[in-house]
Length: 120
Image 1 (cartoon, rainbow, N blue to C red):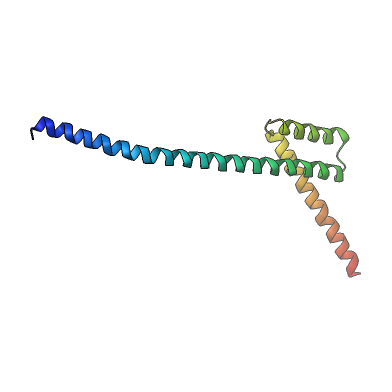
Image 2 (tube, rainbow, N blue to C red):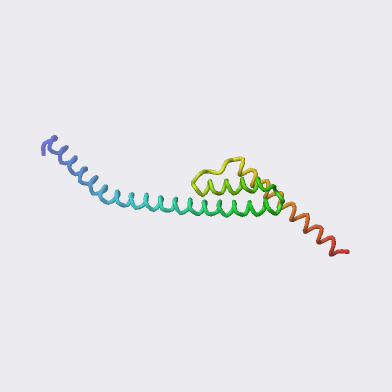
């Protein structure tokens, strides 16, 4: 077989191998990409639900802590904005964390007072 003919044959064989590979690999790759996209969507929905529960809890904590009505209304506004797809600001997250920590400290103090009262 002449050298030119051998190269053409090798190229044709490589193309055939590449086509078989692509016919097998491409659908598998698409399936994997679809699986990853579905998993990402599921995790985002889970995170979204978690944040909505956190915002509802924050509102309840603010009420227990005796925060002013306009502060509680701001929490409700932030919740509504989040439900519409807007992100929570860093300031809102920091306020939520602060209120949660204040609530935790208040519960600890009440528990300590009760335990001291039982010791008498």
